[in-house]
Image (cartoon, rainbow, N blue to C red; front, top):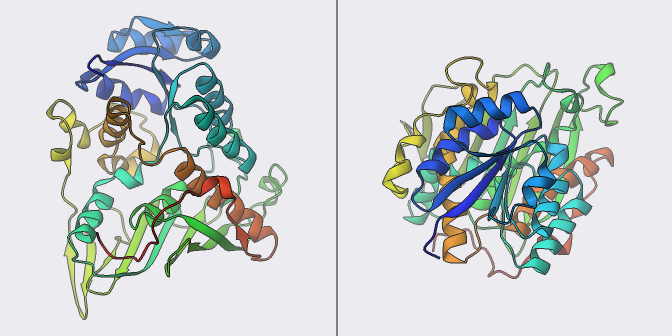
Length: 379
């Protein structure tokens, strides 16, 4: 495939971040944008010089020149829009989570198998500079054998759009589940989760979820490894944190406790502070600068998770490049549909486990694929 891939971005809030990256990627063409609000659509289109504009998602899917859609809409729309795009013959990149139910995840996996098209969940943490740093340590053998992984995503969601109010913490857990599975290339086999504390009473009825915090243990398939992930959304005093810790036989990595401070490497009794370097060198030169800055809402009224999350760790151009490269090279991206379903269903089933007092719940077969046993050592 020598020609540029025509990309359509759907949803222009957070989605606007990706427009200039696609525009400057050497093998992508930022072809079309879609937003229900016509005024916002045209403001963004004019600002970035994009000619093709749609207020109707279905009309966009009828455009034969659209090769792939990148979905950045509210979470309750992800599954239906991904399925519609796949059935219309479009490749799909979708922001997290993949879906909000196990059944929706199954339908997407089946649609990918039936159509032969590409699906990628755009999970930021597994392309962040911190993750890429730890991945490099692991692949060089500096961590030794991985013994345990832990991750957290704690965020106060008061004041966010109505569908977030009372959301079960684990229903949006990909930022902490993703890195613990991605580092060793593992799949979750089963989960056990406990809920703790109680959110404000008026937040509970929408989803029937009372928990302030949910903490889940994940057992990996064909491996001696397990991981623990923690998630909170309401009524828990904590600075925004997307973190992961990796404990190895030679070295361990722990995420900073306070935003802006350095992470820590432990070597026996000798801890040292480390700054994760930038990994722009892994990208085409045309988009390397985007690991250091974004465009979301210009310089004012920026998205809170973008500010507090340190710009999603410079992940956006890495996500774009992985998706575009996978399409050009006719290979599976990471995470592909099954892997995305495994990551997403961990959270959905963890909440179900919490409602059942920590009952062990297996991941469905459609989220698993045949892989060599994970022995928690670098290749």
